[in-house]
Amino acid sequence: MRFDTSQQMKMGQHLKLAPRVIQSMEILQMPLQELGERIEQELSSNAVLAEPNAQEWDLGSEGDGAADPNQERGGESAEGFGNLDDFEAANPDAAANEFSSGEARADRSRDSWDAPARRAASGDRDAKMDAMANAAARGASPHEQLLDQWHICDVRDDLRAPGELIIDALDDDGYLRTPLEEIAARAPRTLNGALAPDSMEDALRAVQLFLEPAGVAARNARECLLLQIDALEDRDDWSSEDDKRETVRVARELVADYLEDLMNNRLPKIAERSGLSLTAIKGGLMFLRRLSLAPMRALAPDRNETIVPDAIVEYDEEEDRYVAYLNDSTLPNLRINREYADLVRDRAMPKRDRDFIRTNVSNAQWLIDAVEQRRHTLQRVLNVVVEAQRDAFDYGPEAIKPLQMTHVAEQLGIHVATVSRAVADKYLQTPRGVIALRRFFTGGTETASGEEASWEAIRAALQDVIDNEDKTKPLSDEALAEALKDRGIPIARRTVAKYRSQLDIPSARLRKQFE
Image (cartoon, rainbow, N blue to C red; front, side, top):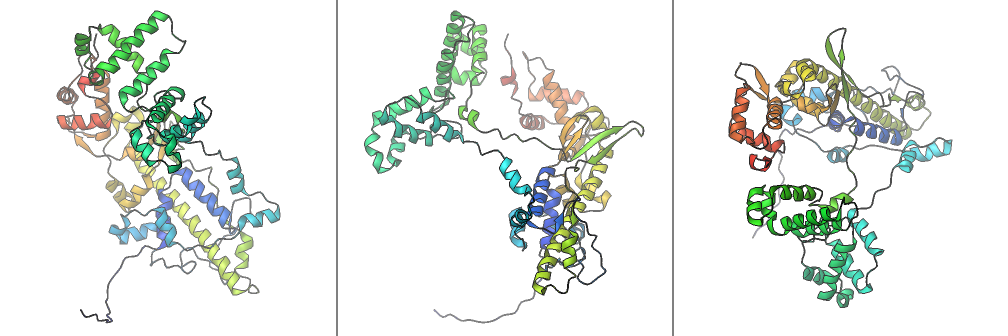
């Protein structure tokens, strides 16, 4: 075998996104809360940035060393494009690509200085440190909460270690999917003497009995429900002892013997096979609806975050139209700190220090430009949406009209990727409630009257038909398609099934209610 080395020259064209273009993409796509956090980070890491109460500096072209926001900054190449729209107009394929914030940070070389130390020396409070001090501590995970309960349970000492291993093996819903023999086999060798089969079984029974919520450590759905029935039976909030005894008996029988039929809403079949009346079965079913098939989810920290709308839509009675304005009054109105900007012109300062400050001035100005560009682009998109979707604000989601991002991009003279980023993760506060901005962008179909109906409006009409159907005789997908056709919306049965699934509506058999 022979190895050779050689040198070759190749010519080619490569498209490379400038870090500043990526930064503009990121900031345009950020929702209001995330943008506020980003600005706070920049304020804490770049002393050149200042809020309105600080000295302001209007950067211009006069004077040596003044930074121009439309020229090269910090030695970084902008590849000849001054802003995001210019780049996307010239490079539509590349502009359509999404870039993660991690990649953008990797491409950006940014200088930072010790702002916290400087503020501490001057006696000023550090907003970032204050926020960290006031932030809520991380809540204990569900597994940690169960372990804390287990540590204070009154059980035999030889069950402590097996119980901890069982808790560690639970999945996110609280089920024990791993066989006890496998859990014991994976345990450290130092515990082998405490992991006899009898000890593992006893530990499992203790975990199921003592830990809350009831149902954790069950090996299947049937066992999970039965454990919860046993726990609720011991409560003293029943109206009478007879009522408790009968309800629990029926519920336990339904779960133990007819769970599959129950899940498929085959109540008449259960009544025929069990001898129970439909009234008794319905009573047991109402009791079972209090139980959970994922008990450990109750221990998970509440991750529901308050949505802060990026814009507000209000009705102007004088002009008889809806107007939209940005809800960004909480964002600081960033400026360049005059003290540091003056140092750029100070010839007495070493060149290295002046270059360092110039780079931070450049970074600050780029952030200000990107935030302002986001504000300008988002406002223009909002104006088009409000004008096109007036009926939706008047009458609700059934009146949403088809609106394509390409049409908005053509109307505004920007790239469709810019529109996509502008509406991503943004919410509007409207007279109809808080609505995702992207919801107003949808395709549609032509109705029998020749008008266009959006897919969102069709889903709303489908929901209305199902809400008003006879629950003892629910409509099949075929019948739902006919009902929508009577409303002038001709769609196929399979489309009805798809939209019903998207709305999380069960089939007719599962929606049926028995008298």
